[in-house]
Image (cartoon, rainbow over all chains, first blue to last red; front, top):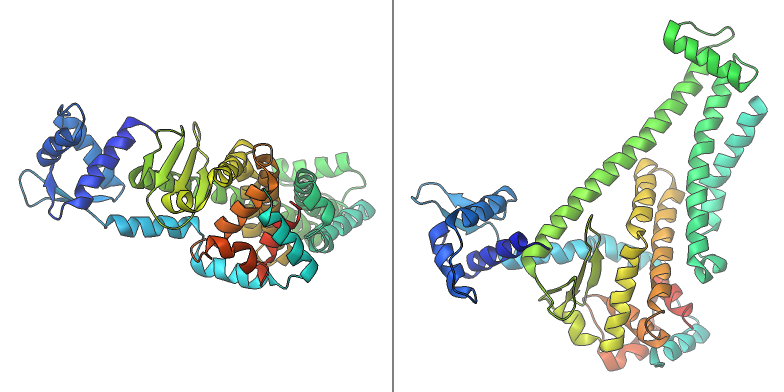
Length: 120
Length: 278
């Protein structure tokens, strides 16, 4: 994954942890404080990242303040829940599939299964 | 031509219903998943082609005696708007049926591919924001969550292997290697392409129960194919334990109860994957 992606992640982490909304300049100084070198990124870079994140509906811009302030659309946990839901397949779908496939195992099969699971 | 149309029609019915109904669970396919996957792809491809060409031949048989004749007749209809002698509403019905079916299958494939690609890109974006790259494993990212999950997200240039903290916590080194090798095999062998073809088939013909069976069975064979590839790097016991632990997903039995707890009601897919490792 590219460095732009990593920068997006750092920005989102800051927006997710802080309770209040942040301006691009707040983010600029916070990112510099968190980075190893302590160097500030160009404000335009941060604004680019923010507009990318806005387009992808991860952040919203509060337009009534000057300079504009940004906040996360949803909590980190909500996105994480979405992600896990996607990976594990629709929960109901998954349950239905399992239910359909639940079969009885013969004692012989059970013995084989035990043997495989205990082998090294 | 009527005979040829009837033969092709018969083949397409065989491949649409009895064959896909008999194939799932075949022992030879589980022993050699590559062969099983090949057979499924042939069944789907030949089934589709024979269905379409039997309709074409049936329609053409009303006004032509051989294929060049039929092609000329259809060409003149398109270019000169001339109905071939002997053609009727039946020829039109059969031929437009073939046209409709072709367009339907191709469009569904296109829609499925576009949709899947959009989902993949969105998912990759979420992964970027929610996971950290692992310093000691290149191309691998770690998500800090309890659910024991591992998967590989194919990408145009570079694929990403995603592991969760919950998985690393519960698997030992060999089991973890088994999971990673299994997931990487999916990407290396381009299983996503096979899966998308069968998904498109299922989406195109939802009323055909065998199309649904097919995509589920193909998914299982792809798992077995990836299992076989993982066995190049790890022993069978580690792979079997890893499969069991990952399949359990969220609701996880205690590690030491694993082998005792398993043989209760076991999902059939899981059972099939484990038994072939014996």
